[in-house]
Length: 74
Image (cartoon, rainbow, N blue to C red; front, side):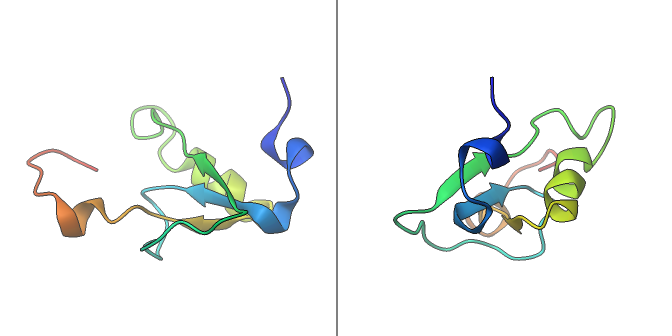
């Protein structure tokens, strides 16, 4: 197993996180998209987003709120 920053150049990595401020509207060729921690909301809310931000990795969120009406949390 390798950490994503050991496997890819940081400039090519985009971290997908529901905590990100910016919403992504299109995938870019040549970029590597990392899906954020799916269990962050339970034990350590925002942990993987914070780790990506601290490492200087670009973070964005999917436009789920804009496209899907959900009765539950993100």
